[in-house]
Amino acid sequence: MKVGLILPGFSASETDWCIPALLALVRELAARHDVRVFPLRYPHTTRPYRVHGARVVPLGGGDTRGLARLALLRRALAAVALAHRRERFDVLHAFWADEPGFVAVAAGWRLGVPAIVSLAGGELVHLPDIGYGGAASRLNRWLVGIALRGAAHTTAGSRAVIRLAAPHVPRGTVSLVPLGVDTARFAPATPRRQGEETRLLHVGSLVPVKDQAGLLRACALLAGEYPALRLAIAGDGPLRPRLEALVAELGLAGRVTFQGAVAHDHLPALYQAADLFSLSSRYEAQGLVALEAAACGLPIVGTAVGCLPDLGPAARCAPPGNPQALASALRAVLSDPAERERLRRAGLAAVAARYTLAHTVAALEELYRCAGGRPTTSPDGRVARQGGSG
Image (cartoon, rainbow, N blue to C red; front, top):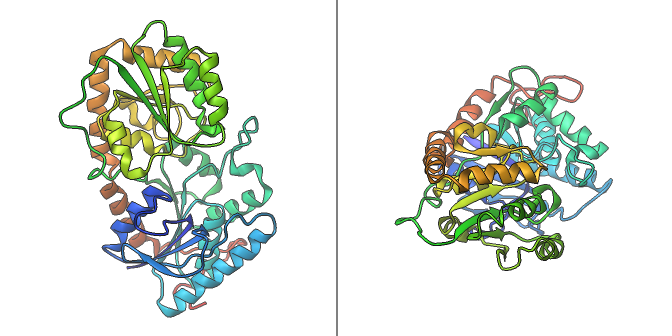
């Protein structure tokens, strides 16, 4: 099968962890199919190259903004059409429904190729107090609307995002297809770590939507009860100075460490050295880091965003933006070793049952096979010419 992937960015090499989950997915898909990748913004080159056997045609859009985005989208449409004329695509698949989704659907309509769109971020939300979400932009809303109305099928990584998408897609054309964990890389430590300290781990960029400030406040509420509790925060970003100041303000100095940016291939060791994982985000489309942690045998406690509510008994959840509730959820696990073990086992079972990379590949291959019977439509509702040449 000949698959065209339209992405906002992609790895410049097999050792570049630009979007790690997509690099792993391309590796697996390219082992079975003819995969061509069209990254819109990163890497900052227009020179084609190969990664894991997939042909990559970068558009080099960089930080293009404003109306210049439309010129980038036109160039992307031309690149996809040219590639199709050379070797016809069977399906186009976009991750993120704004720019990539628009390109996949518009190209699919022109070329008579079915397009699949995967919601992979905050395309459908706006959290004005922290300036997060694609729905704040009129142009983004227009792009997403075209993508979701025109796609042959839409996927999401959590049931919460499926509910957000439902009003925007044709009935019966949205399904749950999470990005899966590479369990060959992420697995429990053998033997499991033992120590006097209880090590709580958080992984995420230091940006407002990840709400590390809320996690720090939750830890401050627990500090007196659990003097052996230590928090490690892996990730970097613009909020680091403010968060370091908050650590001092809350009296957590010596109990919180900032690991900085951690390469993806070093993350398994970080998970394996921890006792408990917490996701504190205000919003997640999925929350793959929590699944990676679960695959490494960590109990999961976090906010009820992304896939965490979907894990059911395999995760303890608290409302987002509520440090007191997060502290209560953490307390319930910290105070009960049997509950920690139950969560650990349930998390491992949940990943093995439905959240592996193999599950994702199998689900996408089935969608690709079925997509030919669901034609891509234009913004005005016209059906694509199946098998068109552009």
